[in-house]
Image (cartoon, rainbow, N blue to C red; front, side, top):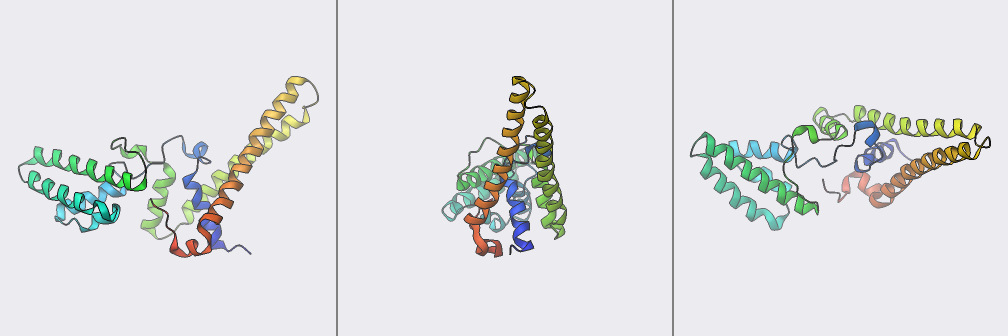
Length: 210
């Protein structure tokens, strides 16, 4: 029997698919390349405290030296005044995020505003801050259910008139394809997530990167 913990895990995996675009809009799922994202937030604090250590978790071991060097250069420039501080900080944010993204194997296309963050990812951050994932699971579950129900209803209504004309038949086929492909995509994601991560990953041993 599948545990409730695994159910929660599977629902959260939809953050990594396009199945919830209709619920949250077609924003990019990139998160760490925003000025309000966790990487830049950590960098702001690190610069104020003059301590690079908290930043190193966001980069690969091979990139640590490059980040340390950029951090020290940034601290030196910041001391020259407010304008220099602003420019130096932005240089460091760009460098840190670019290297972080490269470590994920993801492209870097520049820092974005906080508005670029998908609503689901914002909820994910808030769940970690609050210590409860219930709101996030509720929103994502509702979004998935809404997508299935809407496509089912469209296919069901079109099916009633499918044999009235060729045009009506084609309309049914279109709604049928939309409905079945959506359901197939949901199922593929669930099965793929379970197979890739397994019970051990669910218990906290995943190699997944942000």
